[in-house]
Length: 82
Image (cartoon, rainbow, N blue to C red; front, side, top):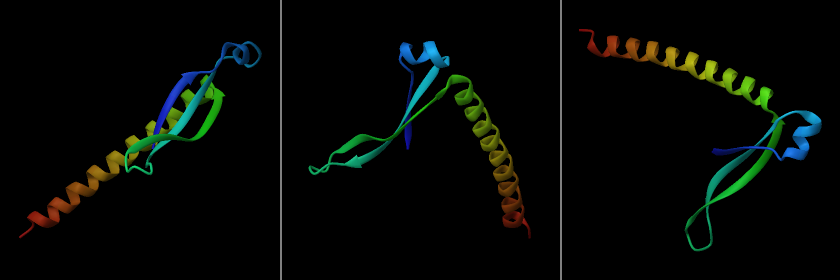
């Protein structure tokens, strides 16, 4: 799943601060068998919330990478043990 991120229209920003519109997309096949990108759903949120969410997701992903690297070391140790 991919995302298309854009600043929300200025009229909304005047009343609620800067907003971002995040279009969550996915690739599907049409009747002719061609891949097409379609919008799955649209999420509108304050830009500061979007930044916080992205930073949280990044921290989670970095922790997962560390865990996976440790797993790989353990697997290689088992493989290389005599």
